[in-house]
Image (tube, rainbow, N blue to C red):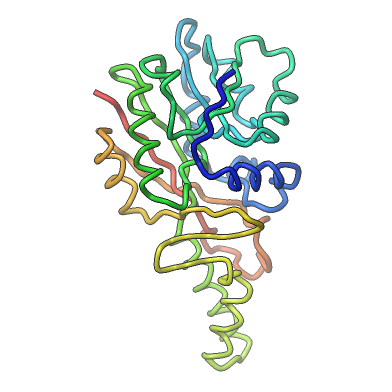
Length: 260
């Protein structure tokens, strides 16, 4: 087991502290009523008897059983020890899953070994230099022709939810200024730095992504054929969902990139 956490230790501790409450505190792209292109892509893969995959930032391991069915070797990587503890419990009996306590900015132990890498809401370091370092590290882990599949939280999804909340307040007769204040409160703007796409909550700091940033950063890191699509989240995570029937739900971003 590798122990190479490079991000600030307080971030690893913060993620460990929230592990038990993760599904309640954060929007879950794995819900059955979400529309998630990543899951569709993984389920459509044939079984690879000789291939290796890594779940980079595996968290509590919701993807690991599926990956273990599809691949000969699964590397589960996370820098938060408590997340890994939950992931190990989820994978009892899965002999092809290997756990690594490590940072995504230092993946030398996996260089040249992977056919596929998956990164779900883990490329969120508050320092974008760490994100770019992690992307370069992931590219070095992938064999020629290998693929990175990922999901990142969407900054524009927050703006969209805010717009819907403003319109809801206006329909109820609020003046514009009051409607905007109400929407900012309900959309929890106090946790966001919108100028630099940062989110802070219970000691955790995350980078949220704009859609134009995804191909820009992946191409800078050496990925090609970058594709982007929405992960439509479940309305069950949002208040007053019955008032938004017929509206598209907020989203995260799915992306895919290939190594030549």
